[in-house]
Length: 98
Image (cartoon, rainbow, N blue to C red):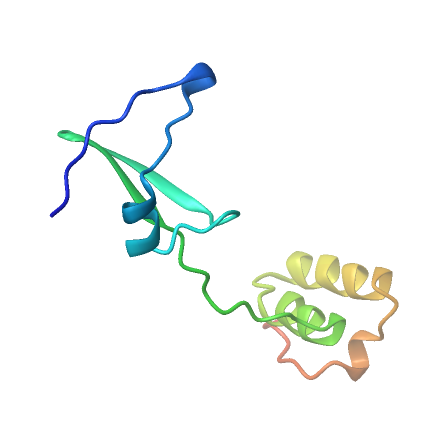
């Protein structure tokens, strides 16, 4: 474990020594999470998780399938229509009473 002393600058800026930046791949533009702990502050790189991009049809399917009550379903149908889609053409299961 490497330990070094650094000074807090104007506006709270802290310069991380190059050797530490390189070890942890803190390149320019890297997002870093600052986590407060009882013993101090932990800096760690933010790991990007894969993000699924949903089509309008897939979003409509989520809306319709997550409706619990007839009122929820009616609201979901209206939202799907506002998206320019036909609820009848979206594969989904209807809730009881619809």
